Image (cartoon, rainbow, N blue to C red):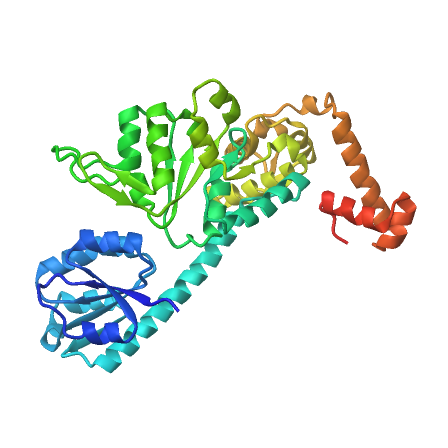
Length: 441
């Protein structure tokens, strides 16, 4: 069983006599002398409880206020001289920010009980928050189409394999959201998810953003890079194909060695899972000499391909309804929903901008709608386009197949064996087709 980890923020300069007893009780103690050290410990360790010795100096208070935003779902326990409980400054501080407090000299047994209980409460809070976050992120991965269900199954598989992940797909399909859901379902969920846009930045700016800078000049003193900020968690590289070759070389070195080197500093080991996304065809980029082949092979250990919306058209109405409910509440609009004609044009449109286009058109419609029902005009779509819609043969066959299965199940009151006989296929084949079309019995 791994040891419970505790952060001791020691800003008073007085060593604490209870530390050996806490360590003997099975705690791993990380000591920080100031707020910078405390934040680094929080970033790189699974610390759930903080302990500090309060006094009436302002330094302790300043350090705590700098640490609290980074401490997230940690619980804090304070120790202080009994007379300081009357302090007009410390009493409200303890009441507002601390799980418990102990007057000096501390009762070791009571302190250990308090720390253990604080650890349990922090763990419970993290678990509860994780479930909420997973539900929130997963709820935005909307769709019952076969293509979307295949993606969701693949995401569950790659979540717990701690290896680089390459996510491909057109602009607007939701590659970053897919990466975030994978992160939230992985063992790194309690650590940062840090995003870096690889496009439209100079080589120098990207180097500093990714790897940091410690050259000592007035404007770049001790600048942490995004890789270091993602310690313990996930670094997401958006549009990785646009990285300059010089930056690609540094990234490749990190993937091989798991260390970074800030300008003007020694090498630093960093534990980070790298996920990258691109709308480009990386094989063609490699062939054209714009992307390193060795970096490509390091990034594509695991892959996800997020489908375009035209390949999951059954999901369009569901997506539109999701964004309608979200933005109608946000904008305070009392609207009923979409007209039948609006639903038709939603399903007929090709959606070159994918999910992002659905979101933007629905948001626009909620703002522009003068009645309680959203029309095609509110969506900025042409109702006449519905009449000219032509299905591909593959899509027409798929739709006809789905309609036939639903009709046979309805006629037989969902008796799969009888429905299979009506359709002239085996029961096993019907189950396979039902799974393909996401049809439940």
